[in-house]
Length: 205
Image: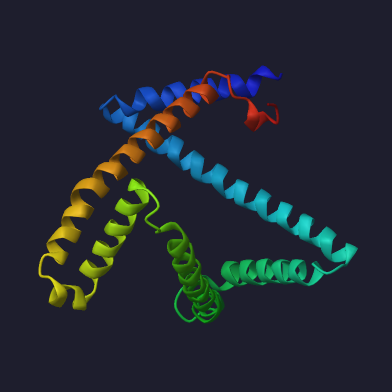
């Protein structure tokens, strides 16, 4: 019985890998059906996560304490937005759309505005020419800042082209390296799960 989930994971994983490299229309139909099943599983996972969230914060509300107010806010927000989305939808003019525009969007803007001050403080501490690496980091940051504002072109006309070169060559190369590393990590993790080496999704280490 314990080997059932491992067998299902192995079969589905190998099937998805094989289907990806098979251009036949039957394989593509099977892939579409499997993706539809994945959407169904995702929907049930959302329901399970919502119930788990309600149980967790409901327990905190009943226990009381300094954090009970925040748990109550989470529970009320989850219930109200879920019910409003189910009965009204999320189109323009609905309650969910109004809450998003009047509450969520301003809060997100506020968080990003506060984050700018933390970034500036961290940059001030990090961008100190203590060694070669931090000197290069400081020089690159200054070039990027001057190249991205209008006054930089008045200071030196070469700032904008230099900024574009930094973005298109060194930055893009680093991003590709990170993307390759992430891809290899994802492949290795997927193989460990498919082959049953990693069983953490079963609640086992």
